[in-house]
Length: 513
Ligand code: GAP
Image (cartoon, rainbow, N blue to C red; front, side, top):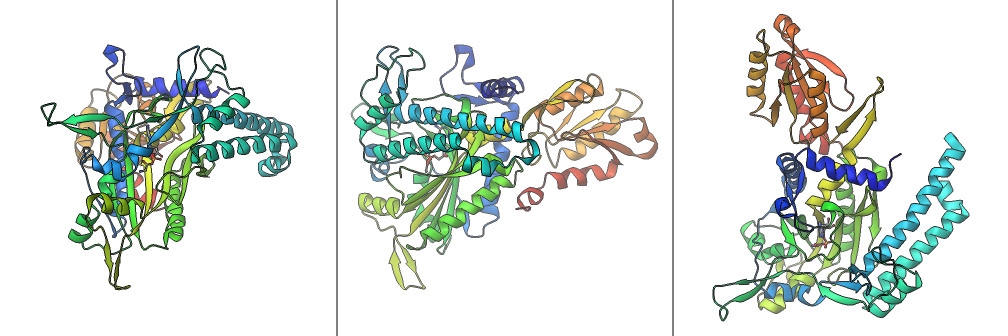
């Protein structure tokens, strides 16, 4: 089996080779942690965004969507706490002069311990064969229990130190664990210091009149400052939600792992405004709803887990992540945060404007509490893309590379392939193409042998190939070849549109959880 690093390298090169993701400004040697999406990537990204939007806005009659500006009044970021508290703890290695996030160094150390646990599981699974019970093994094996306890103790201490802003203890932990710089191999570390992640810029033409601005580090604040606008104009009653997708910017120091951690990225966030005191109930409800959204894509329950935050952000009274098993291990994909009345309350103070809701049932006004769901679109892209890329051994001793994206998200839903470029086959294929293009993205491909065309479509994730052949001339049937099973099905030409439309319909996917 290929190791994690090789798998991840394949993901990155496949994304480039097939027009999904390119390094930004590549002809100038690129810009670190900034990426562009190519012709297929832009479609996949759009489809993920739409799948989220439909699940949140279209399917909830009490959630509406907005599109706020990236630039916001600078006081927004004072009120939100980002100016004072949106920091990463950084540490430099004095020999290599490289800078690291101190918490990430420790987390990487813990990930190595988790890797050892995985190895023990794989070994035991081999030894016990079919009788292997993974849960029992994890709960009872002495070595595994030891690893788990060690990992938990380290993360707990890290969480506590960060929460107390005890940066000296974070450094002490790095030294006690004997963590070395991956570049110099030395343990010659500086003290840990805080570093603000917001990008600054200026609004205005002259130096005197210019106003210092930030590029937004999260989309959420655009929702908070519009809370009353939406509530009043939409006559919304609590509980209700406001959803938004859009770009966010963070000057990430540990910018690596491809599109996992970027400096410019896109978020899909929803703030659910609720009655104070009901936050626990809504926290649980949204955890379940969001997990179901992920599971609806059919990427395997075992690839997800909840992870409660050890260190709560400055605004939260409860928070967890939905983690996904990326090629480099389980990592945060989405956050679910109970943000209390921190944001609205703070904006009230800084703006001197009331941001309250009059509750007709209670006959009083209050600042609502907020339950937030926040997912990175690019990170979701990486989760779906990396999980879908597979190398398969075929019966005839060949292999195929196939990108098994959930059909509802695939950039192109079907490819129309005339078997030959003559005998009237192209005319029928072109007619089918012209009919389907009104409903979905379709491709037309008449080059090379049909087997090679199938492989090309497999690599870019097209779930259906429709071949027009000589039998079509006789009985008006075509073959539909299914990407994942490679099965071929003979169907009436007139039925193709309905079959594919149904297979990629929202209800077929989101409706099943
Ligand atoms: N409004 C809350 C908020 O922004 P967060 O946990 O900082 O919370 C939410 O970010 C999500 O945004 C993360 O779970 C992740 O998917 C995504 N995200 C955060 N930083 C990112 C980065 N540098 N690159 C890509 N995605 C990122």
